[in-house]
Image 1: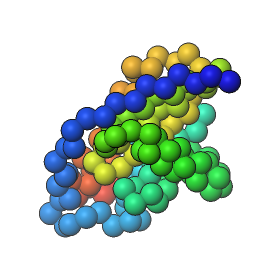
Image 2 (image 1 turned 90 degrees about the vertical axis):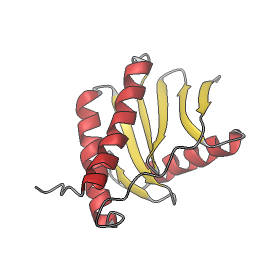
Image 3 (image 1 turned 30 degrees about the horizontal axis):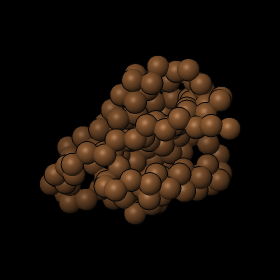
Image 4 (image 1 turned 180 degrees about the vertical axis):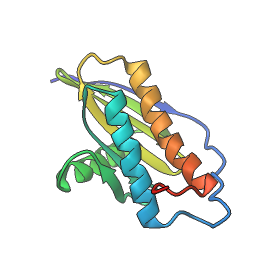
Length: 146
């Protein structure tokens, strides 16, 4: 099996503002992450699985039951980080029957697997916007239950 890999390394961004109440509570971050994945699943009908991962490697939310997919997403993220000389911003991997997208934003990472032949630029955009939605909600001090 051959894999086509495309990864980007960009200069580090300024740390996002944690908001007036300080960093988000872990349970709130998990709720926001799950909401973002639910929204992403609605935007991407070919989505097979996705996970939001914190900067410490904690799986915050997944689209699947059980812990196996989250662990696999963390392992993939770690492997991608080891492959490059700098901080990894995003990656797109294709296989014979699937595509994998990884994006980092605001101290979070989102790994998503889709069916083959999705529109890569649109999917990458949707994945990045999902993470930005989480960051914006945290910075605004919003409540996902409101």
